[in-house]
Image (cartoon, rainbow, N blue to C red):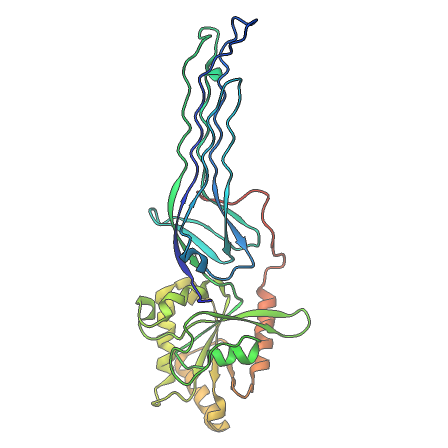
Length: 352
């Protein structure tokens, strides 16, 4: 199935049912009084985090969701039936944004989490509600209020522990295939990866993390150039970034300049993402001699004034891959929340 990470939907909650004007009329009860019942509440629209979904592809075909209105009240103090709620299943990592106000309605980050998208209308009141000592035969009632309607943008940011970034053909997909069971497309030309690719990296019994490969970035990606501008947001849910570097780029380009280009694009996209832990991964070490490789790494680190961790690997031959994954696993374990709430709260969350 084609990966879809953006969609627009329209949600409409049900209107509240109107109250009823009615009077009790029975043979042996001459002064029955008002008995008009209240209307029912309109149905609301919720989003539900479903672990079985991983794209927003379904919303290409179904873009409108409407909850039923509440029934009107009737005589004999009968209350109208409330409208049933509509629950929309969405993948984990979905951010929901109101297009009219740019408000973030909610983010689905926990299995089973519910977010209120549109609240149903409140029921109208029947005339029995207006009975008093000075108004014994009220003939007024109230209509139900209108349900909320919203145009919503859905943005899916896949949830991973480690994100791979770098220029096209830096070896990100090769590393993902080498370290995990994922089988991304690998070829000797730029922009082989067109969609984000997750893979689970196992480092022993009960020890694993999710590695996320995004399409290669180029200069101007944060402003819309190339493919990366649509997928940079997938790095927002990764805590550790591995910057993949081709040590033997075609054309003999300066790898330090390439590193600075990617870091600048990351900073332009988000200061918060750019400030996260970043490791430099010098890939394709099998294409250089050991002495040339050591000299290249030392000069690059010195010119960048880089103080973080760096690794030298060959994703094709797997040289250094296991050591890199083990270090990444230790870092993820140290920074992963100790208690992860994977179930929904008793009450649905909402900023609506």
